[in-house]
Length: 243
Length: 116
Image (tube, rainbow over all chains, first blue to last red; front, side):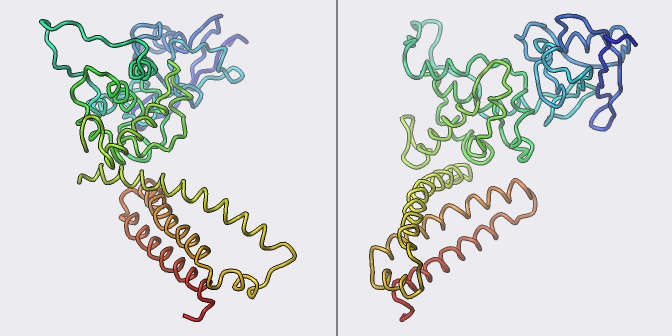
């Protein structure tokens, strides 16, 4: 082993398994994804992991690195290495398919459960909808729309850990951006879907999602927006009707 | 009313009661600091509170805010800590009954001076 080697412990197995140590040459500007790719290509081709774009757009390469969920393609080893050690595990709060690849179905099904998809009532024959860029709704939506669906917030959330039916920060953030989309026609259905203890009202406002979001989105703020919107709609009614 | 809408209303009730509690606790502490200057006996407390409707009303509002606020929080904690135990509802209701009964009894006690 050269003194520039990294000691990398990688989770092998499914929900049951163990950490296996690999020695990976240290090079400058190396990302955690580079490390995992090196192991798979040079040391152990049976290692399973997931990635696609390598440039922080697709949201598929998130893993738990030294105990913290991160996007691995844009995480430099130099920023997080502890001595010469790295520990790489799959994301928390999701079933492990194998090694570093998690089953994201539940994560994305919860987006659907939060009515986290757009539905309009215009056709191609109608004129373009005019959304004022400076309007409050557009500004609020802007704050949350850059989500890449990586699951880092979901894996970092303690409420997701405690309540298996909790929709989670990403789904609720998407619901919030759509609540501020004046073209969308499912507003009441969405408010009903995100109300209560499976939805926004379970959030403890601990802010782990906001702390760890690689796109610097603040799901905590989005969820706080939903809490107010939904609670008011439940008590007084909203501009879309009463819950 | 769906369960989710009921939970949203509970959340709202807990927030509103927290605002009331914030004010009540501040006033309560200020009164304590003011009243204990130079020592304080049970007689002196009763001397101030007995027959004083403002005191009684203030502390009953305090009790009602606790009655709303604490059981909702305890229920959430129990639900998350022991998800399948079924403890959340009975324990939070028990707490609600205890807070309202003991609190109101105390308020009546300091208002009437024990004569009721």
